[in-house]
Length: 101
Image (cartoon, rainbow, N blue to C red; front, side):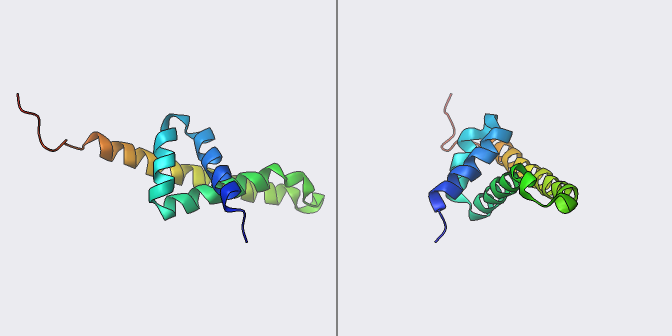
């Protein structure tokens, strides 16, 4: 069985490291959106793989480094897009009931 708490913590840490201003939104979205959670878990795994690149045989190291870096960059963009869209959506919410003057 996977180590789910460790996977989740790595996922949250990866997202918060890249987007500290959205820490509360990251925690909220991790609980609400399986797709966002999967994206953050993939980011955490890709960062872990990139940090372990020295364990890859030298003949493959640079090509693998480029692949993992490209994946990290793509996932950072996707996570950022979700966070910015969430923040933008929240800024357009009209409270209900409307305030009476």
